Length: 393
Ligand code: ATP
Ligand code: MG
Image 1: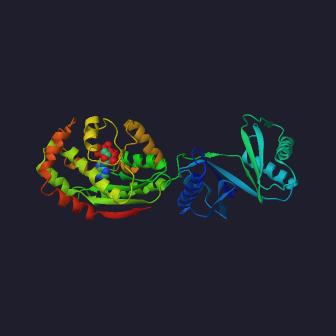
Image 2: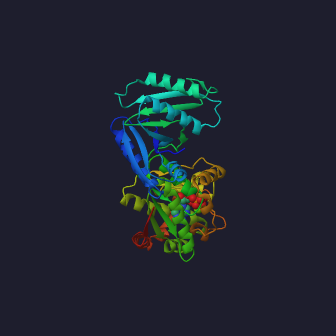
């Protein structure tokens, strides 16, 4: 079957009044972004309170659907056959042809649902339903009408042209990116943080990201891996401004000045501070991490509390109650897993102590951080000023 358009279904809860325009405009913008690299010409538009993607000429159907499935805010994607209005006789023939092609197995129940956007059409919706239903029954005697729970819901929309569709391909749900402000994601090369970014973007939040690398202890390839992960997340989240921070001098300084079992926690506090610095600068409304309770020493409830204490912004941890297995499942679904498991060194693991504190005490950690007073302000400044900015899309 050749489809000429897609009707985009979206959840309508909470988008009454003025919000509706913002929602629809953001949705159309994200759809255009998603289809930018697909082979074909697309016209995304809004008509009578619905969003359509019209495809002009030849296009790659599979890829188009695949890309639409990554646009948050879309609940369903209906492939549409558009036909010229040449009178009811012709419409009957086209509908029969549509059923013939779409459903090789005719042992099915169905219902016709007509809608008229063009009110001057000579028949009303009820009449169209009855007449088309009758024509289908005549053509395919194995089929039966079921108005309550039909296998096939054949939609017939009468507009300038006539739109036929019956299939709904599920979309990812959520809200269009850009409808809920922006947040700064702490993006490492691991499995968790790309998933955390995905989950926040799903609720309509635009993402920026920050990655801490520690050359020469971490390689250029480790950084490339993070850029690749940001690229995969951006398929869902739209363009991501990635800050790559050289963290080596800060890490070495902490290593020299503080008890080794506190290294990880102090280092994490500085990561949060730097992330918050960029977040404030760019008007982000919160930070996002891939932390989950108890996953490692730095993610016990005590460690999370001590890490959190340096932040003045909300820190969103969408994976907080997830087991690793559940996180892995999502990463496979969103296609970050294979990249995440590539074996490159991580800056956290390089200076890690044999027995890191698992129940850090905030006062004691702050006391240790006093050893950093002499040089930390200038190291901090240097780290943020020399950050490399990469626009990933
Ligand atoms: P991930 O799989 O996301 O790397 P993890 O299980 O390795 O997580 P940690 O290393 O304790 O856990 O990191 C916890 C969170 O801190 C990460 O999810 C990420 O948000 C952030 N983070 C850790 N390392 C870095 C880094 N090098 N750059 C940016 N953020 C980081
Ligand atoms: Mg990690």
